[in-house]
Image 1: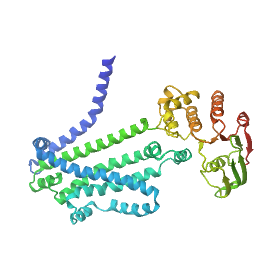
Image 2: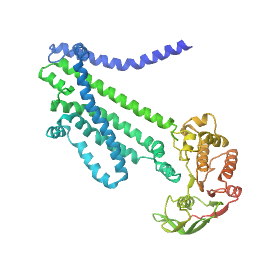
Image 3: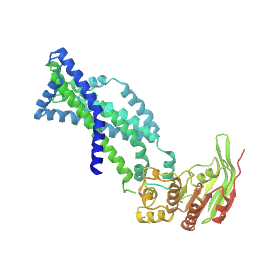
Image 4: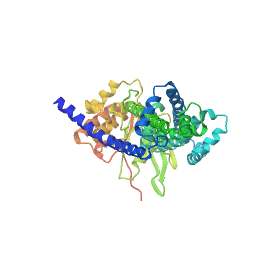
Length: 264
Length: 194
């Protein structure tokens, strides 16, 4: 009985994995065929060539130093923007003046091309923190807008219950406010992580930030090394994907704690 | 004593209460009856300070702690019954005490460990009533608390409310004269205004 269930589970997992693996295999085959057609590694490296280059990079200390450099700045920009966005949204929800002043400004930031901010920061003495600042600026309006929307979607009936029973603020936050806002915050994180990495790396490339992944991409362009370009791009995708999974896992854990916690 | 004097409340062009007077006797039960739209719930909200009168005055509410069952259950769906009740209680009230109260109204075992979103309508109603009656309040407002309950459930809950209210001032909103009579309530009839 147990072995049958285990076999069924394995078969189900295999069926679920088959489709995405098939899709990946298809596009790798397309890439391989295109590389064969171009027949010049300098222009378009094959999947195997990119993988081999990645295999050379990973064991080196420089690789991990470069990854750490970008991870700290871009990840830091995302985290700080998330915190500031939540606090800003809370302030906007309680102060009309703050809302009137800040919401249009952040809407303008959201509509401004990222390259304008990159050039602006490069002209300022904070250019060493370029990736951090750019990630921050790209994520902040998204977090702020989404969280403010979440705050405005709280259930007024439950807020009235809290008023009648004089529920203390911290309990109200954990039982009523945060559960209402969390889905909006999670949605902003899903968008924000990818945007932070795209804009952060673009900033590193344009700003030629020493020791960063962006600098490695720029070097790949100068040296016409498509193997490096593809290898580092794969690293960026993996970092963005892993970072998003980590953030979402932490938020889901927080969500679970809120519903199961013993605080009240 | 809580008193309403000359209270008028409008919603747009509609006058729900017009120069309304009411005394809620200290420790007594007052039942408010009347058709839908006659202002019963508005009256409850005025007494609890959830809305203010357009004219007239509500007095005797300063410093009072209120508790209420609303027409809807108004529970935090993701929390268990115990956590919903404990949300409004002082930390000194133990989990065991809440479990004991919920058990008295027929909630026990699995129904205590599930989020209330997974409970039936009748079970949710019981949680809302226990929440209101366990709260540290000297004014209890029950807005159609027994609506939708079967006869047995209603009897259990009415006995529970009567015992738990223990001399506190209670405002009961109901369509059922038998409920008012059972609580020995002073009945106030409201009429729907054109």
